[in-house]
Amino acid sequence: MSAAKTLVITLCFSGLLTLSACAGHQQSAIDPTGPQSGQIATLFWFFTFLLTAIFIVVLALALWTLMRRHRGIEQEPLEITHLPSPATETKLARIVTVATIASVIILFILLVSSVVTGKSIADLSTRKNALVIELTGNQWWWQVQYDNPDASRILITANEIHIPVGRPVEILGRSNDVIHSFWVPNLHGKRDLIPSRVTNEWIEADQPGAFRGQCAEFCGLQHAHMSLWVIAEPEAKFDSWFNAQLKPALAPSDPARQRGQQVFLNHECIFCHSIRGTAAAGQVAPDLTHFASRRGIAANTLPNNLGNLGGWIVDPQSVKPGNHMATVALASQDLQPLLEYLEGLQ
Amino acid sequence: MLLASCQREKRDIRPAPTRLAIYGDAARESPLRPGGPIQPQPVATNPYNGSSYDISEGQRLYNWYNCSGCHSQGGGGIGPPLIKTEWIYGGEPENLFDTIVKGRPNGMPSWGGRIPEYQIWQIIAYVRSLNGLQPRSATAGRNDTIQTNPQTIVNRTQGATK
Image 1 (spheres, rainbow over the protein chains, first blue to last red):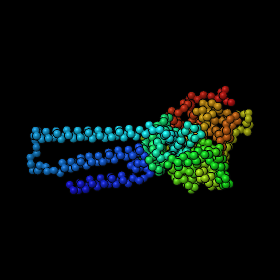
Image 2: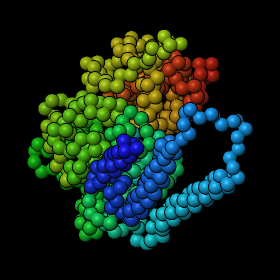
Image 3: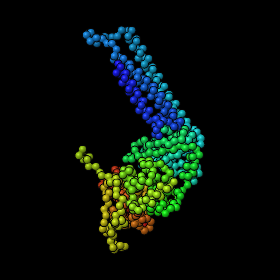
């Protein structure tokens, strides 16, 4: 009995420890930073504690049944036709009835709490002054487009979503190839991005911070390297970021970067990438206008710095095998100016 | 069955970005051009012939680089069709390579140095598959766009050669 108890307690504690290890991270559903994820986390803990309690009670009853005094082995076995006494029969019927009713009530409570949570999560969509972001999944990166009634204020960027704190954001999900799934656990649950249709999800951040998201639907070779950052900032900071991103890229002033720009414009780069303010207007790869302001490269596979970028450009297939970045023949003296040009695109 | 399954198609997933010394001269046309028939002497062969992975990559690139903008899905539009038996500048892979790299009069731009060489070969593999010139084992059972097979290829260039 005591051994069994120890086992049960150990199991419970190790389970809780595993869960608590997730808290405080930038990608965790039980470390909520928005109203939706908050409610989802509350529901999760309610389910977890209630069901853990039921699990313990059931196990305890099962153990009690096994351990209680039974008839001695030397006694005659009961006849097959043996029937319990009417008193025992009534007692058993009562126990089964009570257990059934309790199960139904508990299941009903779980159902109601789940539906109520679902409804209140959806309520965010009735709020005004929302920011609308079109998020397009590609193998294997995210295109982010900030919609605006004023066409000159539509912003296209990639793999990084900046949002103002305390303002609802509607994510319109699309896909250019296969089904992807947008999942930023700190903010909300998953939403699939499906080719040739638009899905939507409302998110909101309560507090500033950087929250990591990940494609949550297997989408091919580099599914695991398809992540994005959601960066929640106070409204003023968000506005200044947005206005800076709207500007075209500054023309380089020093000779090395000017040469880098020429390298960019005279190679295959411009067929897929665009840099506003130059002739590069490719539409099938991430926009690089303010490339250096982003945290990562290759859909946040690597931190964005000169060394990583060099490795990525010279041999993209070693960093992310199977990705659609072309391997470009680049003369050795062209690489450094190109890197300096790109890393200066603030 | 088990033994057969071992023979898996090799994907050239990490192609060398080198540019051939013969870049832009994959086929030497007859010195008698213009005038006489083209008798290309191949200098290069398509490394991706018969590779289903590269054919499907070619299909993606065909749209990425907007070949479809002029040639539509092979049926032609602003540019000539690509499903045909008689090609103005030759229909062998090496001719197609030259056509893509050098460009041709009346609208075909020169893509040399703009599209990596290995991707040009992938696009060629795809265009050849449209004409039923790739093994059936390497092409899709059902095309996404125009359904073609060697029996139904008709010479669409007649009257539309531009």
